[in-house]
Length: 569
Image 1: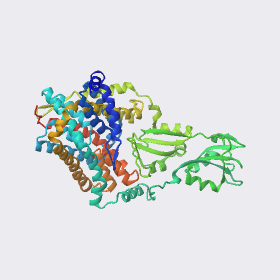
Image 2: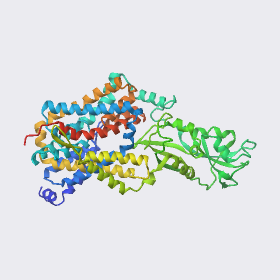
Image 3: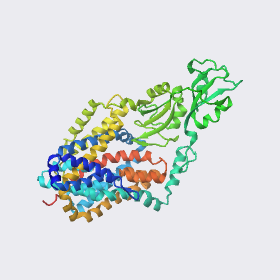
Image 4: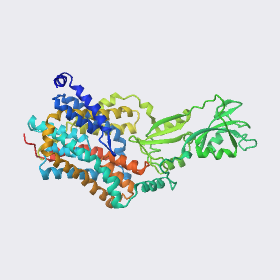
């Protein structure tokens, strides 16, 4: 113990990084299908380590929370503003109603059972599984006109409330989404996911687990022209334009590659390198050529490139529309092999609608990809360096917005640096999605700021609250846990039926995804994906999740302002 005491006084940051390491280790342990998660694990380990009397400068907590919340806003900016459109109105309302119900449920328990501001905020953070509330509520508490001791108690109560309520806050949506709602509605999640996939694919059959569609795989094969085929004497470009299911990548004559643009007359014995879907390559070329092995020593270089969609020409159009309307040769000669939205893979189905900010993976030769890149948006690789000018401006703007105060019931309330950086991040994320020259922040950098920022913040909160946590748990642990169950379940029950019967979101997969997204319930969403066994829930989840992330984060200051009870000194 003497060693720990000495270490706490001379190197307190060691405890912080140990809390992060052990917290994430504990967070990976599985009990059935439940995983605690690194953030909750870090908080619990931090509380345990905090018993050694460690003191960490509060400025560290504030800095890393601001970085975390800015990254959250930046990452969700394009999709958040997209969710404000009329096309997504019912999903936007579903998420908004779910978030408001969460706030009202927390306030009802706080007012009805005399919970203090800190406990109410912790109840919201854990019961609604929104860790950012810890920061935004904590900032507001620091501005209250109460003693430092009361502020410290309320900060501790936030951590206790979060720790007690978080576990069922994570488990509850899993139960509701994968068992309760499907049971009472008599839905088979897997069967409904198959139906939705078939609808989005225009009726094509959906594959079972373990199966894959070999016809949708991209391949390059070599074919030698048959004697007497009508293509002899024709330019290679004409063949490339005529066939839309594959691209003529190269022409080899006597073992030498010839530029396809210069082949004005194909000859008998020419070998063509064709790239396309496997099913097309196994059927169409057989009418004019025979497949041959690749020439010894020949290399054909193709490339996978990730491009962020910014062009209005392709935004808000389905994949089928783009395929039917595209006249560009380069666009026909590259193949879309993946789409991501907010870091999640979307199903490559004909009726999938693309949005600004989507990340497209395209495959083709570099020449065609360069042309396509200009038409679609900007490559991810071009954003490999952070634009520190706009990053600095964005963080500064967020901190300044956090200084703006208003009053609720005579109590001064502000969104704080957390809320300000969230709004600033949304703005600059949207700016990057629409004007790619500005505000570059690589995906890896955003993920690091988000994950590490929150881990450090929660670690400091846990360590600082450690000495008082056991006392608080003894006083209100059981009752607080029951309140957390109510906060977790009530908004989901009311929100689901409101979305289904009033907003008419009656596709089972979309209705369940709205519950997961409106609750910002990542574990529930993961469980839904496991039951669906395809990516159909992702599109709806990203819209509602982006909205919920913003609204739930802003509830922290509102709860502190609307709950007037302070804890006993």
